[in-house]
Amino acid sequence: MTTGVKQDVRKLEEEIKKRFVGNEEVVHVLTLNLLHERSTALVRAPRGRGKSTLMLLFLKGLFNDDYVVLSGASEIKRGEVVARLHIPSLEREGVEQVIWSAFVKARGKGIDEANRLNPYTASNIYHLLQFGEVWAYGQRFVVGDFVLFANENPADPTTFIHPPPFYDRFDVSVQLSSLSLSDKFRLQSLVEKHGSLIESMPQVMDFETLREARKEVSEVEIDVDLRATLNVLVRDLQVCIRNRDLSRVKPPALCEGCHFVHNVCSSVREGPSERAILVMYSLLKAKAWLDGSVNEDDIYRLSTYVLAHRMELVRQDRGVEELQRLLRRQREFNDERRSRKQWAILENLYRGFNRELYKLAGEIAVEDLVFAEELIRLEADWVKKGSLKPEETISSRLTSDAVKL
Image (cartoon, rainbow, N blue to C red):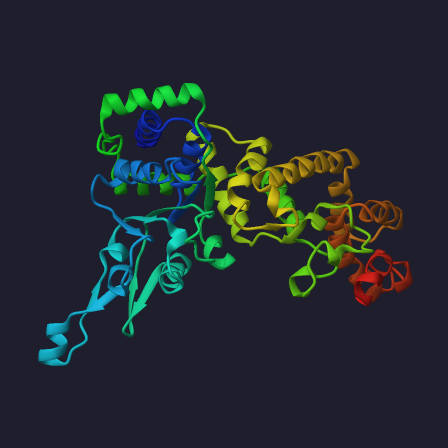
């Protein structure tokens, strides 16, 4: 069964690439993202780049015409998003019979121009993405498994400002690039051949086949070293010795005078949520299943799609390029960590205090905030046991100015 299911998933990607010109890696990432439950994806681009076309190609390839798309450009009523009351039952019998919307019940869901959704509509969709359920008139409907694609043009002048938690509920976000000269000729040929690219898209697989693929992917095991690399990367982007999460002051002002002012943390205003790790883990499993292998390069490559909409960088004006620069920097930093064998040193210290190893760990900690964070946790126990004096700890050296702040 495995081979047949994989062939269906690959066929879906192949049929989409036959009709959608350029952005091939984006199509592959969106295909990988399908392979876990309640998958959600956000396609971003200026007008005319094919956002809606790409969304509809995926939905049609999975559901034929059995999907529902909400348009942020229209005035969406509550009944279209969540539910409405059956008025005759209410008038005749006084019974509140809830009729759940087609959007809620559909396995295939689309949101066109999500940036134009009014705050009320966005909050209803946010709850659906967060909990896999909706509430209306005191009644609850469990949505279950689904596929959801959304697209937006953040630069559109009619855009609503949605809060970061709304975007955090999307597994991945992809940015479409403009077409090269040769791609433009290819697109013209495809339109002449197919007429409507969307109407020409066949249904390649049904939802039950996709669920079988998701089940197989969920059983894939990822190497512990890759999982460690993923966890360290996300923690690097979250950690702040001055407790950025609770401070009203944000980098770069927060970083003034900090020992780690040149570390990657000083480039991050708001770090990613824990969902970043969960989504990345699902993507790595999907890639191992579909492509036959996964490695450290994939972590850094896929991280761009998982982190871009979950983080606020100090140089936000540089967009995705700034995030990619930070990821390259962290890749080099992790190579340095391996050459210092610092994780082996930390693992030995987990087993028990050793003054010589601790001295070496202290030298590493002044250059590595995540390493320092773990060492400080161990120090608290060593001080309590009398193995270490408070004034000898690395925490006393690194956090004094942070406490003053």
